[in-house]
Image 1 (cartoon, helix red, strand yellow):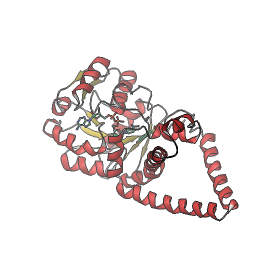
Image 2 (cartoon, rainbow, N blue to C red):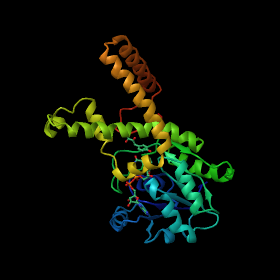
Image 3 (cartoon, rainbow, N blue to C red):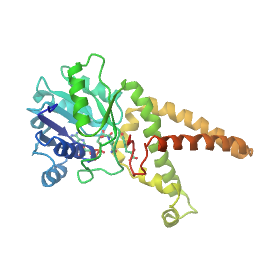
Image 4 (cartoon, rainbow, N blue to C red):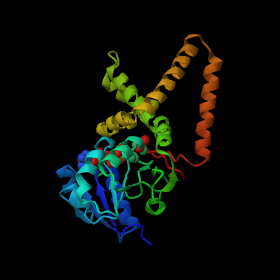
Length: 301
Ligand SMILES: NC(=O)C1=CN([C@@H]2O[C@H](COP(=O)(O)OP(=O)(O)OC[C@H]3O[C@@H](n4cnc5c(N)ncnc54)[C@H](O)[C@@H]3O)[C@@H](O)[C@H]2O)C=CC1
Ligand SMILES: O=C(O)C(=O)Cc1ccc(O)cc1
């Protein structure tokens, strides 16, 4: 049975268009209405055809929805929720795909006090953005973490879990605060480090840009991929998961300082012990089949 007959997707970039394509591929009977604030994205969505209808406002997009999924940057979630509030059917479930969950849950609850809200985060993506970047298999074998509030109706959580499973994801339920801490270290901090290292290399006076490009075949190249991720999306993630990111950044800087001292004082054993420990972590990820060397993130198997 279909978990929802009508799904509305607000924000038709990488994730929104991937959800739409995945619904079309896995549940072709479901009717999809999309909306995006950018008229060029709406036109492109129309041409690409991954929605049945592309609406001109957030309100008209949700008028007959069973499920509404907000796929906009996390800082825009509250505004979009306000814009659709008057037209949202009373029995619709509202969800989102934001990369951090506590601040989004608060913004949605404030804008839609009567609605059933079940936040979600598909831990799947790429460094690309926009409607052309999406693809139907993005969520296959990936985790989708749901962070329902404690009073969320069980049936709504079950329906949303089924929805994501039908798109190929493995669903996990988690507390929003815990989600934000875990993702701060596994996703947000790595992005911050990538942005920093590529910026630092670019700032180096004696190393020209062409040398950076020419000799970036090593580890640096992987950082440049992540550092190409959408600036608005990541600005919002850091501003909205501030506490957890600052906590992880503090720990990271302490560990970096310890490494700096080990190098300065020639503590080779300390360096080797850390590198051996981290190599074991990589090996266990590979053994569990969680890495397929794909240029993306979070595939479970
Ligand atoms: N990029 C990734 O790898 C992943 C992103 N996410 C989350 O998914 C969400 C969307 O990210 P992407 O699809 O990557 O971004 P994107 O930049 O590809 O798409 C976002 C779309 O939202 C639209 N938008 C912005 N403000 C709006 C508003 N007020 N009303 C309507 N539309 C609006 C933009 O015009 C754009 O088309 C973000 O919250 C992000 O944290 C989650 C998992 C992975
Ligand atoms: O492209 C990558 O390496 C990613 O890390 C993609 C990604 C970005 C944000 C998320 O919330 C989840 C996955």
